[in-house]
Each structure stands twice: as C-alpha cells, then as structure tokens.
Length: 62
Image (cartoon, rainbow, N blue to C red; front, side):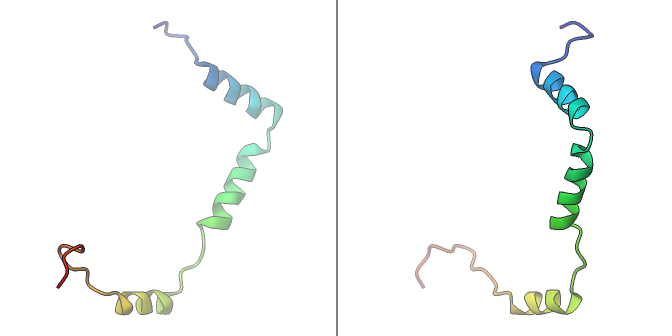
C-alpha cells in the first residue's frame, strides 16, 4: 500500500469535519451528558449490598 493512501471513510470524515466544524464539540457534549455524571456513593453501596450471589451453573435445577 502507498504511504499516502487514505480510505474513502477517512476522506469522508475529514471532509465532514471541515464542513461541520462544531461536530467534535457536540460529540463531547453528548458524551458528558451520558457518561460524565457524579456518582451517588450511598446508592452504589445499596446496589452492592443488594447483589445476590450467582450459582456456579445457573441452568441446574436444585
């Protein structure tokens, strides 16, 4: 393969980012809206305490 080869996808993404310069900022905002949240430690402790141990073989009828 040539050293200066770019796939069609790479070319499309570069062109898209040139025509839509705000796309990366919108991606960061979307990520922060979904993933960058404060965790409630008390709620997490409740989840850990409520966890039920799984049997080694879940399909075995006991």
